[in-house]
Amino acid sequence: MTVPTDLTTSPKPRDGRRRVTPAKVMLVLFGLVVLLATLRVLTGADDLASSGTLRATLVAAVPIGLAGLAGLWSERAGIVNIGLEGMMILGTFGAGYFGYFYGPWQGVLGAILFGALGGLIHALATVTFGVDHIVSGVAINIIAAGAVQYLAALSFTGVKGGGQTQSPPIDSLPAISIDALSDPLGDLEAKNWFIISDAAALLRALVTNLSVLTIIALLLFVLTWYVLWRTSFGLRLRSVGESPASAESLGVDVIRYKFVAVLISGGIAGLAGGFLALVASSTFREGQTGGRGYIGLAAMIFGNWRPGGLLAGAGLFGYTDTLRLRGGGESIHGLLLLVAVLLVGLAVWQWRKAARTAAIVSAVLGVLVALWFLLSDSIPEDLTGMTPYVTTLLVLALASQRLRPPAAAGQTYRKGSAG
Image (cartoon, rainbow, N blue to C red; front, side, top):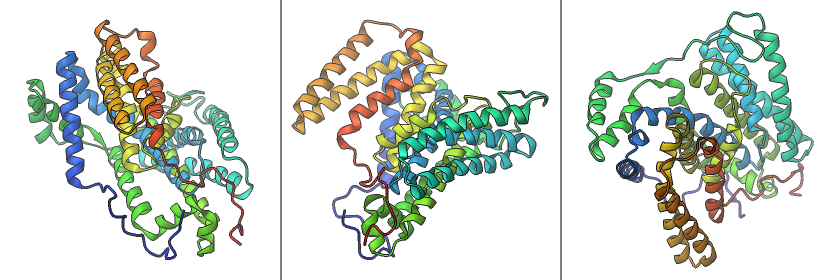
C-alpha cells in the first residue's frame, strides 16, 4: 500500500469508484421490496414479508451487526478480534447488572464498559505483548464465559426473580411508535397487494415499537462510515491497518491508534451484548449470545470490511434466523427458491468473468436447491436450527472471491519498525 504523504485530511475517492448515494440506497430498498413480494406470491408464505417478521429481523440483526461493526474497527487497525463473542458476553452481564440495580440507561453504559474492558485486555495482549491475535481472542472468549458465570452467581443469587444463570427482569428502554402511520400501513399490509402491501409492511416495521437502542445502533453505522472514511483520524487508523511501518514513518502513533481502535471495538461488542439483554429479552441470561459474535465476524467479512455491506450481511443472517424461529420449516422452505435464483445468477456472473469452474459449481448448486424446493413442501425441523450457520458458510464461500481484508491484519507490529 502507498500511504498518502499528507495524513491531515482524507483523500477524495478515486475516479471510477462506486459511491453510495441516496438514490442508490432507495433503489436497493425498492429491489428488496420487489424481491420479498415476488417470493411471497410464488411460495404462498405470507409471513416471509410481514411487518412482524421484518420487525423481528431488525431485533435479530442489530446485535449481529454491532458485533461485525466492532470487528471492523479492530481489523481496520490491523488487529484481528476473534474475542468478539467474549466481549459480547461481558456486555450482557454489564447490561444485566447495571440495568437491574441502577436502570436501563445505566445498563447500556455498563454493557459498553464491560465490553471495553475485554477490548483493553485484547489490546494489551496483542499490541503491547505481541500475543497471537487468534490465541488472545480465543482466550478472551473462554475467560469471559467463566467470569460472567461467576459474577452472575455472585450478583443475582437470592435476588427475587434472579438466580445463578439469569438476572431479574430489567426495565425497558423507551420505544418509538408512530400510530398515525402504523395503523394505516397495517391496513395496507392486510390487503396483500403485490409490492404495495410489502412496502407497507417494511415501513410499518420501522415505525412500530422501535427501540431507541436500535436507532442508536443504526446511527453507529453511519458514524463509523463518516469517521473512518471522511476524517483524518479515520485515514490514519486505516493506514495503520494497511501498512503500519509506512504510517509510522509519516508520524502516526501506530500503537496509540491500535489501542483506541480495539477499545472502541470492545465497547461496541459490549453494546451488542447489552442489546440482547436490554431489548431482545429484557433480562440477562447465561449463554445469551449464542455464537452471534462469530456470525458478526462473518457479516463483516461478507461486507468486505465496510459498514454498508456489513449491515446487509447482518440483515441477511437476522432474517434467516427470524424465519427459523417464527415460521419453522415452511418459511425456510420458501427461501430455497430465492437461494436457487441467486446461485444461478451468480453462475452467470462468474461465467462472464471467465471463472468457469466456479460458475459450474454455482449452477449445479442452484439446480439442486431448485429441485429441493420443487420436490418438497417443508424442511425438517431438525435442519431449520442450522439455518443461520449454513447461511453463514454459504455466504462466505460465495463472497470469498471479492474479499480484500486490510493488508496488515493479524500481523504483530513493534514500535520503531519503520526505521
